[in-house]
Length: 249
Ligand code: PGA
Image (cartoon, rainbow, N blue to C red):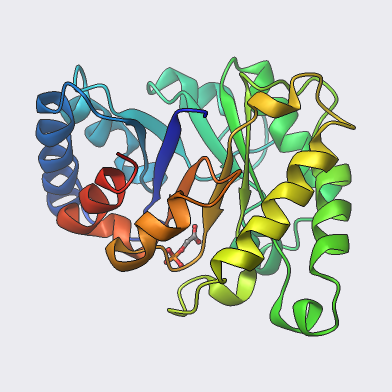
């Protein structure tokens, strides 16, 4: 079994006081839990990365960005590079989240370029994939995941620098979660597909995301090939996010 990764994606939420308070609360809990059976990662909005990094320093919690540009620096108004995230103490970056794919028209090739940039900066990429409701209804869930994996994983990916997050679009922020059986099917399919792209595919962590909460976390985390969770809404509440981590025990 791979050590589980519980990643909080705060999205565009949190002003400084509340973000710092949430991070401090989690930092204290994680630092005190010497036997934590999971890695904890927080991905705050870019505006809070620096201050969240300060309060979780020394706690063992990992820090990440939610997106990055594919280039190191330059005339790209509003963007941040992977090197800039590394400079703030990030060791992880989420790329290809479905909200980026939808809101910013990011295609697989762009996601692969971003993941390559994450690796260039010495960081780990969480590459997100997942089908829409219409694609699932049409019976295309597995083929969509295959296409996204083939196009979004850069050639230098390894189990050390890459994590896959399966996030069915229809389950994100909706309260609907995939059944344990569906998650098992997709995750084992992803594991098989990964062996085409990555030498040590059996060591790549595959996260599930989409309305993960304390009430469903233990069941989801016990599904074969589920190596953690990417959590949105429930990562904004310390008790809920902590309970999801505890469900990995
Ligand atoms: P959710 O978001 O937990 O609020 O469904 C998950 C995600 O988008 O990463």
